[in-house]
Image (spheres, rainbow, N blue to C red):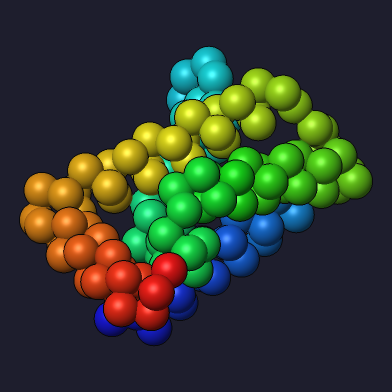
Length: 133
């Protein structure tokens, strides 16, 4: 299962980068104002959820996992500033961060509800106590 979570995380990171590299995104026709902010929110909610599934990559540190996502969002916006027809936008960055936090929180809440996170935390504490840390 861990391999599947890793592949999901990498697939989402690559998808975000590829979508950001498109000079004229026409994935969806404009349906309402600020539609692009909603799309930014949704793609980063997926990243936040996948980051939550891969919490062990960040030594179980939620702050480190969220920092990774925020840094990726910042790099994504800087990357867009070099793509013709795209720009670096603080509004997009804030939508990215909000989506990241929402997706991450959803993953943590679902894990707690199913008991998976609690079991993993207890196992991690047990290993840490056995090794003398």
